[in-house]
Amino acid sequence: MNERDSEAVAAMLTRRGYVLADSEDEADVILLNTCSVRDLAEQKARGKMAMLARRKRRQPQLVLGYMGCMAQSRGAGLVEEQPAVDLVVGTQRFHHIPDYLDQLFRERAAAAEQYDRQLRAIVDVAEEVGSESAVREHLVVEHGDRKVTAFVSIMQGCDMHCTFCIVPFTRGAERSRPIREIVEEVRELVARGVKEVTLLGQIVTSFGRKTMPKKDGKSPFVQLLEAVHEVPGLERIRFTSPHPKGFGDDLVEAYRRLPKLCPHAHLPVQSGSDRILRRMKRGYSRAWYCRVVEKLRAARPGIAISTDIIVGFPGETDEDFEETVSLMEQVDFDQAFIFKYSPRRDTPAAAWPDDVSQGEKERRNQVLLQYLNRRMAAKNAALIGGVIEVLVEGRSDKGPRRMFGRSPTNKIVVVEGAEGLVGHIVPIRVERATATTLYGYVMGEGGDEFLG
Ligand code: SAH
Image (cartoon, rainbow, N blue to C red):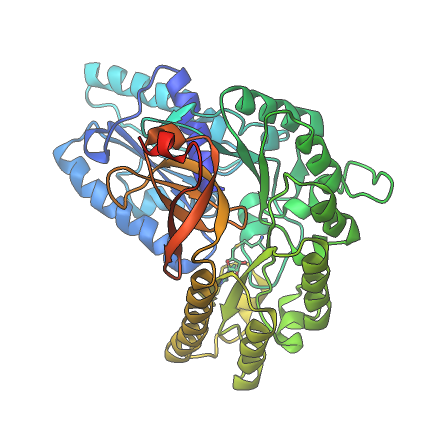
């Protein structure tokens, strides 16, 4: 989400006449797009800004800003804490950044003439009706490469209020863009060479539920998937983040019916213990969750299932944790993101004792990571010798004449070959595998041509 928001701001600035710097050292303006979902993310952003503030002492004309979730929730407090900051822009106001930068440069020019004038930072964390449609501009070329995949923002905000989660406070209430506007954006991207889109939102499965009716038992999100699926030339559709509750039979059936919808579902489970799931207010039980996984696997054999897990939620006992371990064994996830619980301000759980020690959180984290790594390595090893369809996205950093792309199930694949492969879906024979990456070469006729 932040990557997409940053890209849209960069595209707006480019249109306004600003130029993307090749490196941070050359930049005159540096905006940090921030995440608040865990404390660590905030600490990293602050640390980075402190480093930039030191550089600003040598280079006083440098413009520094915060955007995104931490900007939204801390606002002017960030400027008080770090006076080197010139700009703080919240999650509903990204599209005003070009105006604010112009304003900052105008004020500086004026201040240079009457040098005693006090320059103030610009802070804007207001809500804005319609801001869900403001993130729409794309960069055609990124890092010198033509873009093959693109993120498309379809909605903002979340109304779920899980007890651990700050997102409803930083991203606001659920607001969705109209289907035709999204389809139009996808068409334009495809016309520029994009082959795969990832539909984005804080809770995409809730897309349109407050404003659009169901049709033939299909939720607005499934209606959107169908509409995007119709776009000629588009090859692959992904989406993130969904909520498991959003995987009704209509969405499960969409995996059966819509071939462009990639065989991958990210289903953030958070915990394997029903007691903890209730305290988190996730709205489902372990058994219900496992049933959804079964239905998905029946609808689309070979579908990859990934998840998010929090360890050390307030009150999580050894028994609760063992339930999460057993859930991991039961579901056998293809990928998982495991987080140590961190209290977030304003959330209900922040008022409860954070009673699992840091050491114990770390231990639980390691138990799950090690299990996951073993399973991922084994699953990838089983693919050696087989052939998978890879959409080649660009040059790999794993050496010259190597490209990278992804399998339909979202595995990273490094491919021997030249740039002519970029933008093509090619059959790849898997030669070698690690827990996180597959390596292979292009199969059959045409392969030589690409290799050449
Ligand atoms: N909207 C998504 C979550 C996005 S945040 C959903 O509802 O599933 C990504 C992940 O960060 C979450 O799935 C959760 O596992 C983790 N996370 C969120 N809040 C957290 C917190 N307070 N401490 C630790 N991890 C957290």
